[in-house]
Image 1 (cartoon, rainbow, N blue to C red):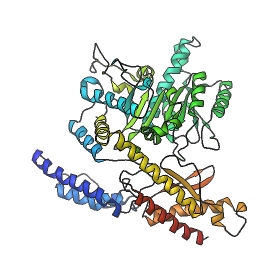
Image 2: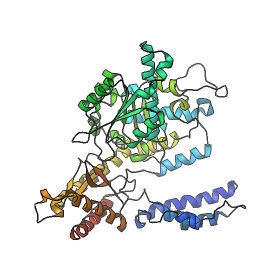
Image 3: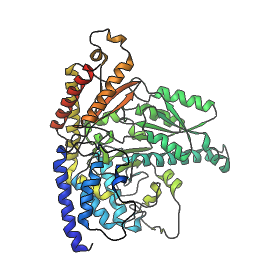
Image 4: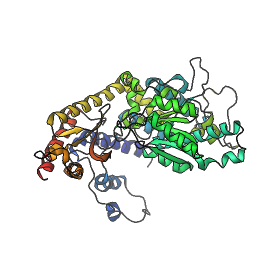
Length: 500
């Protein structure tokens, strides 16, 4: 394919993408293929000779498309949104065009410097404390800064690595043990999470080889200061070394917000690395009215949210900030002669390879730059607020129906609900209804919705209850899509209840 053919075919692909987005409402949101479907209809070896673009495009429609679950559909209410937008796609196209492997400044100065600039833009947009910014008001380099990770899981890993480095350095500086003894203590290090923390926390602990302590959340699904203190004291008495704690701003199951300020108190007194995972709900901090809910983040050591979830920036673009980068860089920096360092003024010279697990990295800042410029802060806020409004509307309608109970406060775009016991057994003393019957009704409702396939959502379990989870946040989602969701839920709930 030469430039002339690329020009022609590229225009066709752009048209196909636009057509896809314009027709999404007519496509069932969930793929219904069976495992192994593609293996059965695809050749089992790569082609020896080149194939035509038209044949490949035909196979895309006939073979690949049936196996796609359409996350961008306005009828997708499954997991948290994976926002896409045309401005972000354009940024990604340019990133692919340059195809820079941006591990340090000299690779392409614009790759590093644009990331430094837009991460400071974004940090200010969500109201982060200035200690998290790369550049101070006087134009000099700060101790903190932002970096784009591939996912919140990667952010968890590097935060935990930085935390381990910080505590090891403290132990050695205190003269408690020798360098060799300190390094051998890592198996005693303990990271603290609640039972509502995302699974990426446990995965990060598995990767770096430390212990974890899962703490039961309170009645509001939050990690509390009191329970954290008790767990730490117990572990210290057992000869273990607390080193890391994660607080969550918007948990996956319920969008609960941990006691961020209380956790900060404990982290400071115990000298732990304090990471805040705001993967989904962090985007809401672009709206000033949500910032009081995040009191305490200014005291964290690291903070992360996924712009690719609810902020119109195609995957992958996970925004992470650290208040002091030295521990992260000390832990991950490895120098080689073929990776030259820049001397002199280094205010904008960041070797982001030292801020992440891999060496190479894509020019992801471009798509964030396009999104922030083409939507503007006002457009991003309008996007967030529209979904919160739709979620509140859905909550009101479900309560008004009378057969449902809301299982967690609706703060952002997530509505967690279930068919309540009185709807399952309206003529009995529903307080004595077998919980298994109620749980089955709710799991049956989720199955019915997925089989119906007009909308897509998933169920989850909180505090032993099977519940239904509707996450509102599609880029193209409108009020009419939420009304359609309600219609499906009400209709299929009647079918489930009548079949009991």
